[in-house]
Image (cartoon, rainbow, N blue to C red; front, side, top):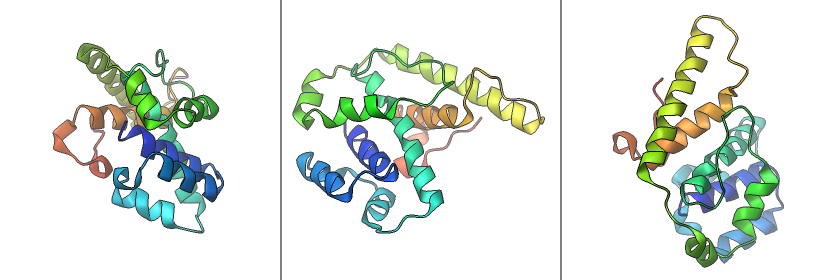
Length: 169
């Protein structure tokens, strides 16, 4: 939950949620201590450039962490971006305690299977890019990257902090 909540908030800001709503959520979830330094800087900015909006709106894909705690039923093949409304409803319509109470960690083997699949998908994307080929139509490059990033963070890949996670493919 400690990554899910701040990721939902920075994504909401990037998708231009009203600043008052973001502040309300931060207070409601007692989230100040959950943000990384980069996320704090982003949240404090009054004027955002296009690069920042894109970068942080993609963090919505990291919300598939909800799958790892059974708050959403399953994750699809990384072909399409997630439904923002569904993710925001799942997080913001519940208190932090309700989210904790409803969550149960899925089996580690399922997480590792998903990580293996996403690494292979990321390699297929990279190989297509390197060889100037078309990326397989069943894969969205951005979704693949964000899921790989998220799963590496979840398994504490190379003991890296959230902002430093690598996605070698």
